[in-house]
Length: 74
Image (cartoon, rainbow, N blue to C red):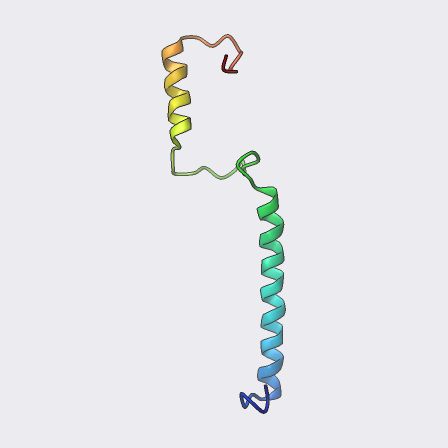
């Protein structure tokens, strides 16, 4: 890097520090992406987007009357 790019020792060290920090960010992102899935969404984050399945479920609950506690489809 010193010969090809003409960087000083400080610039080379800063580049390595940035590369290490980037790898740390990727590791954290990978860790949390493995924890969050459609089956295991984060509970404290509300999405501004309403999914069609959520709308269908609410409409079905409103039209079917009182629930008997059994929400499984038959």
